[in-house]
Image (cartoon, rainbow, N blue to C red; front, top):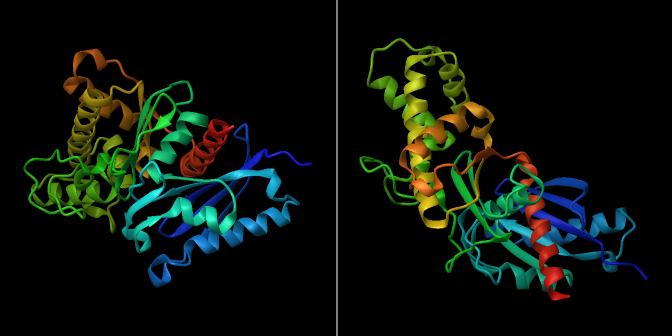
Length: 320
């Protein structure tokens, strides 16, 4: 008789889906990446994941008794009972992913928001492994966030907890965010927001800047030139890290995490980015939280898979 000692962690993205096969101790046995089929309003996505997992089980000479379940992170608001409250990037409306996948696979299935899963992964095996309560901020094309309190993801009543990118914080912003509001953190501090701010600063001054000679300005180039001492790039970085630090300070006043974790593509700027965020954070935070550490994520694009695996592992232990 086989023992249930493995699981799948799935990070469902708008372009690709990452699937990891894990041991119960968190060892990643194998990882895969497959295209996300968004045709017909995403109706094929869960079937494709089910078929791929079945193939892996056969290839690895496993059977259903080896698998404790499937953890799934999705790019949308998710309630505690696995209902996805719309997922525009996938074409989904309100859908109970957890019950649908259970029915399709006959495995235990747990579903969470992708940013929360990344936070859970970093808490479990990544940059925040020594802490018990964390807030993750992922700075990429957009800004996401995940909250882990005492080892558990916080979803919120509507599944929207941790939507740090849409905290309204830039009070003089005149343009509209993709979410429909104005003044979101994402508008100035995401990768695309940084480029927008850089172009705005360049248009507002005649100051010499190496950014003017670039064919395509990117968040990376802004940080690279700021590190070299470029005046305009340095102003841009100071501006966006001011708001990142202020956002973290406001979050600390609500949830008081043991540490903050900075992830996403922009986090490649490294300790330089962290130090500037920390300076703004300490200037704005309520004094008991002043020394909360800010650390870099370490799992990269694998964090969501790790977190999804951890979610279903914890659920299986609670059910025993």
